[in-house]
Amino acid sequence: MTRQRKDPAARSDDRVAYIRKRLLKEYPRDRTALTYGDPFQLLVAVILSAQCTDARVNIVTPSLFARFSTPQQFASADIRELETLIHSTGFYHNKAKNIINCAKALLERHGGIVPQSMEELYQLPGVGRKTANVILGEAFGKNEGIVVDTHVIRLSQRLGLTTETDPVRIERDLMPLIPQKQWYHFSHALIFHGRSVCGARSPRCAECCVRTKCPSSAV
Image (cartoon, rainbow, N blue to C red; front, side):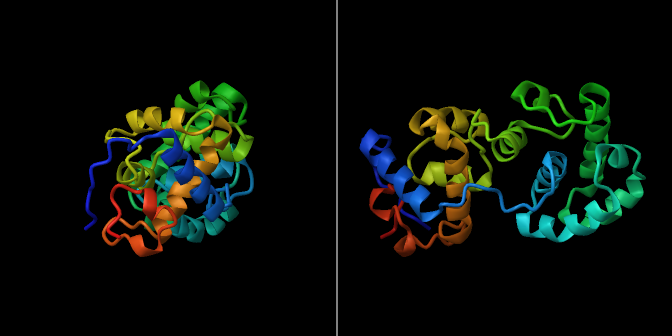
């Protein structure tokens, strides 16, 4: 358990700049760990990643995409077969339904092409703001928001960058603190740091590259 220290300047420009620069240097990779072949496959993979690790999704997608790979194929897929293929990612009933309905919506509204706007993506079945931000940042290089997953929620709170618990409000707090061109990269830096160092139960504060500026550091 980490100690939460009072920090009246928790979100000061210098402190935030230090955290941002150190994390981006520590984690130069600005791409998702999910494997995919095109924007649509990325969309499917991100839907599957809800409440599931990227590693598990990457185990499932090779056989999945060997069987179904296009919106047309997913739209006409037998839902029971799809559920079997994605079963190990969890919540497979809802995920299968969302993937099929999403594929149908893409065909009906966008000619089978993944749209490049937040508004259009957000209207697709199974797509929330987090998923849309991943698609825009990863597939199209657009920084329209910050990806807020469980790691980003935890770390942004521990680092004193927000006191909010709602993902939308957390994103709203983070956006003014980070240059827009770095929004997607910063999201991944927090995610990778959360996976490798700042775990939910046992954060390894002694190994943390931003421990000297973290109000929750146990060191």
